[in-house]
Length: 180
Image (cartoon, rainbow, N blue to C red; front, side):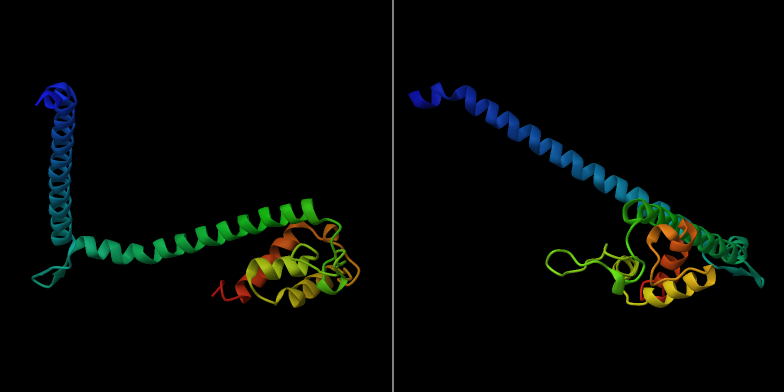
């Protein structure tokens, strides 16, 4: 009994904490239920007003608008995606020129490290193949170099332009599993 009287303050504080925590949790659950009900009501209202309905053979105007705008939205999405891919490839190409300017274009010309190993950044071909998880960079590099009058077997990364490297990256990406 004496021990209970000594710890009376601690017991009261613990009960208050439990009471406040319980009240907080109950209030939170009530608020969550209220918000879920509002969202469900809004979704139900929007679904019923936007659903395809026919009255006397006429289709819902909202459906017609969405149907007509769908190709426009798809085209805008494709353009935005293509632009994002191009911007990413250009930034990637700028980084390659900055960090690998002396690297050879083809893997066969890569200089091995002291252990005789070549890595992804030892040539443009290796890097592009690694980034795109494919093995198709060699043919694209050779073709783009031939078009530009560059000998791919002796050229270095700095002999290419940012646009040429970006083009290589994009073509290899499109030919890989990721581009499909």
